Image (cartoon, rainbow, N blue to C red; front, side, top):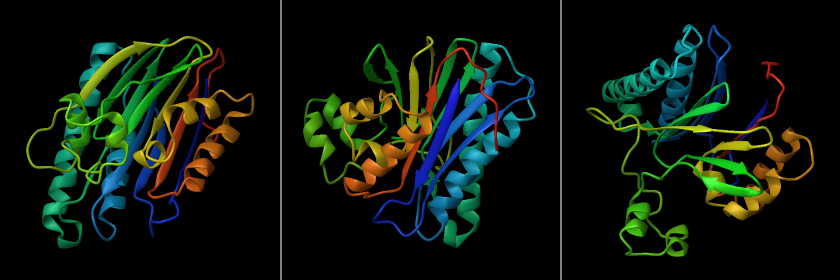
Length: 250
């Protein structure tokens, strides 16, 4: 397995509110996370950073290997990060209203646990096809589902950034959870909407399937999103599933 990731401020933003990280627990099981923060000043930066590093640091201390335990752990700790971010935002006027999306995956044997809140996405690229694994928790997605607008209209809708679920809100939150399998030769992409708002699924697939080093493909995803306008922060984390073990080189 090989993992590469990159994040960019884009061409229109002054600061990068995305955070990305890869963490191992004490049994060597990988947790990969992308979060896209929101809020004025430095609040979005703080929210996404707290969510990613908070989950990552606790995961590194676990020895979990069982699917049911990992599922419960991930849901519980995403909810804890929600409370923690909301509490910090409530106590600091500069952080008031901050929040973040999150998409996270745990990889164990030939299976993937996927969890997400918001509109950061996960994709599986398999047998030359690309499939979106997550459902955007957004206003425009609900309009598409209800038949009020088409997907093409949603892509340019003025309210496409309005989220119906995020981390950093009062009370409990709902976390979407799923397990899926992968095979050698498959790819998984975690990304913020700064990538998917600039590039179509077909463009993303075409870049990922190029016969070039994985880090070059991640770089090209970022470059092409910037060339398309770079309207937001852009983050891409790409996993190539093969028979090799991945080791942290940082």
